[in-house]
Length: 364
Image (cartoon, rainbow, N blue to C red; front, top):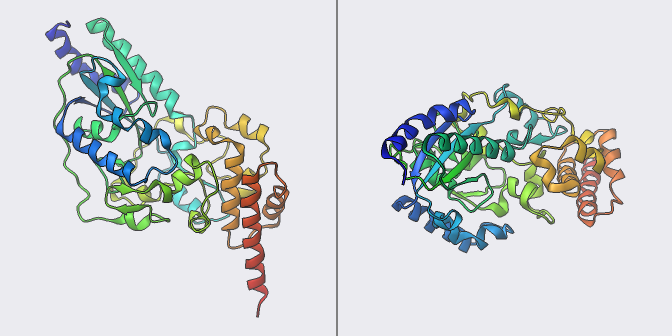
């Protein structure tokens, strides 16, 4: 048993400790709550409709999301944290890159270091600091590493509301990572939940290039550019390729148009752009051999998709260019005989698109 006074003292200190560790905000949620049950029911329906695509792990562990004690025996409370990541420059560079088809657009969260390791390390430090006050207790850090209803926990902890794009949204916007610390401590949950402030706005739905937000709060991953360029292992459906534009890793469109993201707070410097990724051209990145890809993207979340998917994505983007410069065409053709059938297919598609565009240009 932990001393009640010590737990009260601990709870009062958590937000300050989280800020000292670099987190943007912290909230506490109870593990048994009607909202969590409702969130799990909606999640189960989403899985039933196949909207998770080929992310089989989401269906395989669906029931665990409603049973925190199955992830950590004796779980009594969940600490949720957010960590802002948007680069210092604000929204303008991202919008500018999208407007230049020959440049590569990478979701802003992936321009710097891998957030998984950083958040796990900081959450672990938070747990150890808690132990220094109340003694040993059971805890588990979760950062995309376990089946967790993270938005539901964050909402219950007062960190925001679920936006119509299905992401956690607050008055500080949505450009933040989420992480959880499961604990066996009976911490006082923060029930001062934030009321939704999306109102009648539907900009995120209208902005989605592939119409993946099929209804408010519902995203069909099978159409989502983030899924197609990151999670999807195979051929990108041809009908969706043109809408991908120059987005080679993820997509931020639904967040870029959100009114709550107009004044984006500067993110953690750990996520500042590296290796010129924020200004790189498609031709430059298409020329990277696998050794270069692995070297330059060490410590980056992008590295996980592997070189073949990287080239697949860039080939699609090059195929979408209204006009293609000679150097870009040269590096695209150089991949036509790539060992990977996946790469060859998408390069062939891109070259065919370029040939058709050239013919249409020459036709009087």
